[in-house]
Length: 112
Picture (cartoon, rainbow, N blue to C red):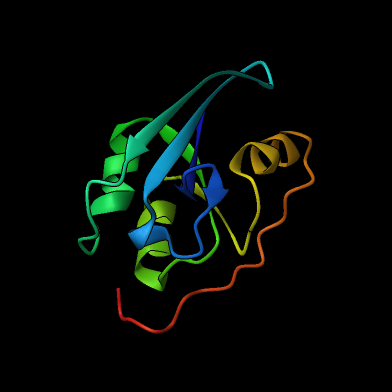
């Protein structure tokens, strides 16, 4: 499984589409086995959820996200965890421990 965290370096970005990078955590048997940083290829409505799906991501963690992005992730069977802040690695560890909870807060300042 892969967990992607929308980030500004190693800190969770508060807006998914405009993050600097995605920290991708490769998980095997409940443990992080590899971490890679992938530069955000650019914000285009509907593009990033498909981009991360094509990379094999099963979970996306972010501070905020638009409703359309959440919808596309859900359509692709990717779990969305939003309303999160802090260090990306700590958030992944919390997720793996079953302690990371999505607030479900949707960004409403744009339509996609």
